[in-house]
Length: 312
Image (cartoon, rainbow, N blue to C red; front, side):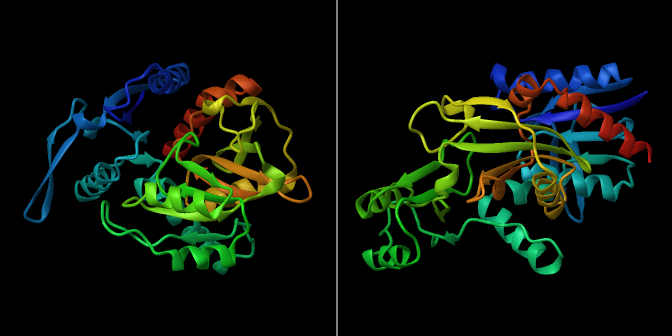
């Protein structure tokens, strides 16, 4: 019997987060594999001279075949990669922590997509984006002159996104110069980006769940109030979405660009009412809502893919 572990964050112990562990563990058991949940704080490494030393792990890593890295602790992930390589262990990590790092930072995501657009035959459409200069907390904020440059490149409303964030909670909309100045001042000391507002996608988007080389499920999310965001956490609703071949191809190429084994790809609606503009790529996308909306057992799809890959 194959054995694996799912690594999750020790500071995220709410029912909402732990439920995904249970869904993946149950799916693994049903498919004849043993999967154990391990907190990121329970695997401890140290750097000693030229080596990465494993100080503690509740599971013998030499007895497992795969790791589901359901966390964004990139430093732990990098240590795991080095430890596996140095000890010549036959362990595969899903998703690769390096790919998670690119997915977790919205600006890094767009840089990776730019590389993919430049080197490949397929072009992934992105919103016009500006990276805001790095600032230090409690120090002087960017001058009005910089706001002038933003206004010369973008029309109001303007979208502001923190580079790190989930569930739409770190996404803001400025309808005026005063609001833009207030939001950028509030975010002083944090990395964020400026983006054009996609009018045709106001209050709605599409989440396509990619597993391997196919889209296994898709849902449309809609705001039930005047919110420009469609995230369910903000009170939105979801329904099964019948995606087109073009939308499927776009989602698959987004996951391919970041080298993700599975991902939730969020798309915005373009002027033709098609989900044709990339919003973001979620390496550890919560799949309970899309499972409920579509009836597709996403956990089973992920585990089936993992077991197939480690066998091959």
